Length: 207
Image 1 (cartoon, rainbow, N blue to C red):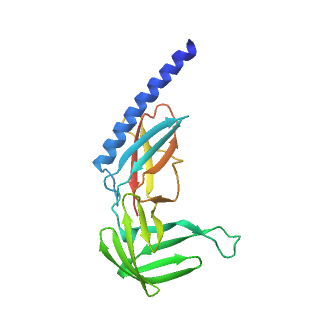
Image 2: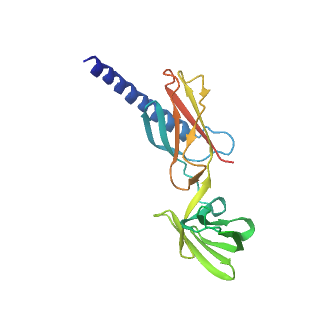
């Protein structure tokens, strides 16, 4: 009976904390109280607390920008020498209409022009190639290959407070990878280091 009472109290505490987390995250992010070059319109799409670790998924809602995205092929290719890890083709669309197509150990440099919000036409190696980005699959189809849209991971800061007045930065923030896929939520986690820290805010910055 004692164990059941303790478990009930713990469940109520976790549920209450999750409600406070959700409300504060949404209020902080929607208000756009970010300095520097901040991401517009972020949204918390999932919050979980397990074994003293807060796990959250943040939808950054970054605008689709051909020049700000590196496209990485889903298909991998054998490397040279063969005992090296497999490689992926990479495609970037830079300034002044210059595109770079990395394949194996060399780079093809060509020209491109944007022909629509999600279509691009590139001339690489003397060949004209039309690329189409599909919002349903979140993939770019280019020269018969599917490419994932990858972006540099933004700087993420999490602060905690017991009274909504004094805030302390939480160390040990973790993210899934150095790069995040455009259009997909960013996963961030951190440990709860003190029981009195009941409120949290997230700050997200782009370079």
